[in-house]
Amino acid sequence: MAGPFSDVERSIFAAKEVLSEDHQPDQILERDEEIEEYRHALEDVLFGRTPQNIMLYGKAGLGKTAVTKYMMEALQTEVTERPDAEELHVHELNCNGKTVYAVVRTLVNELLPDTASDFPKRGLGTADAFEELYGQLDRLGGTHLIVFDEIDHLDAVDTLLYELPRARSIGHITNSKVGVIGISNNYTFRQSLSPKVKDTLMESEISFSPYDASELRAILADRADRAFVDGVCEESAIARAAAIAAKDRGNARQAIDLLRVGGEVAKKRGDTHVDDTHIVAAQELVQRGRLRNRIRDQTQHAQLLLETLAYIEQHEEAPARSKAIKNRYEDVADSHAVAPLTTLKSIQNHLSDLHMLGFLRRTGQNHGEGGGRYYEYSLDLDPQIVLDIRREIEAAANPG
Ligand SMILES: Nc1ncnc2c1ncn2[C@@H]1O[C@H](COP(=O)(O)OP(=O)(O)OP(=O)(O)O)[C@@H](O)[C@H]1O
Ligand SMILES: [Mg+2]
Image (cartoon, rainbow, N blue to C red):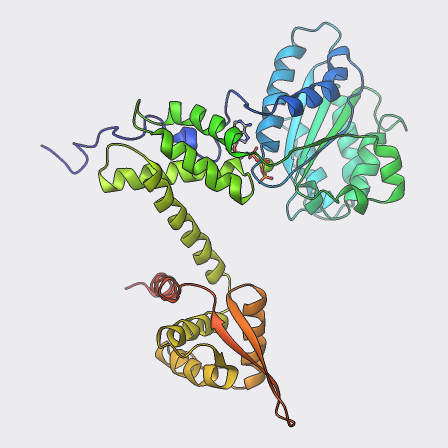
């Protein structure tokens, strides 16, 4: 019997996972210089020497993680062919929101034999964690490359970068070798390090610059080839996605997202090809999704004020003073059965925050003769989109 899924065919996507965030490409395109620098910095490993420390810099979506994965795999393969190289262990850790203790502990747990119990979460100090780490590194021997992604998010990063790179020279480890690879979005990271760390680190620096439209086109064409059914993805779709992302921040992740969402739009519309119109629709969807997340991150009262300003905008009463906004806001709060904030000052503080966050426009009015200065506010977004998003958020919070 024909069920609801029986006539689903691969119409647009041949391998959609190729456009997903966790897909690691076999081929890195348009990063020859960075790969060359990386290769140079890693060469020592092939000869059994202590690896150099490496710092990668660059904004989001520029290939730092993808290139690092690619280099680590290539190095692993090469090491097995080289008689002078020691066994290579690669460890990848994300530092976002972690303490040095937590990061070293994670590393220790990775190194511990399967039969050992985990290193304790609390009760011991960072020095104990380092001591255990050195013990485990020497127990295993070989060369260890430790990749710290988002290293600038780590608290007390100085301790980590002072300890690890010197571990061998000061005799904490004798049977193993360690190299640190740090990845950061923040170009000023090095300046934030303490002078003694700066002096001892001796790292190679590799910086990743934004992709331009033609580089993004090459990356996208390669992905599209494998992700879509033959002939489905048109040149105009690739060109448009590349152009949008290049104009924004040259982010390959954004370009790939646009292509995937563009494909979904085409599929949903029942179209047989993906072209630039689908990419434009995808961009709107993505922007809307981002705005939804930003609105959802606001406090309840800030959201109610956004909703209020959307109504004011639609009734063509904008820009409005905080007193008028407060009156309308009380009705809005009432309609959601929420007790409103009562002081004008608290409303003004929220309005000022929302303005700083880019949700609102603000204009100053001077009223001389002791009248003082006051501000008028209006929504800096499409009011209908704000109201739609608010409705979605409310519906998700109160299902049924
Ligand atoms: N040169 C490239 N060739 C092929 N794919 C690439 C290239 N650069 C980036 N990508 C792809 O783009 C996406 C984003 O890249 P990646 O995750 O490496 O960025 P990143 O620099 O680590 O960003 P973030 O700082 O946000 O972590 C991934 O899907 C990656 O596979
Ligand atoms: Mg990354």
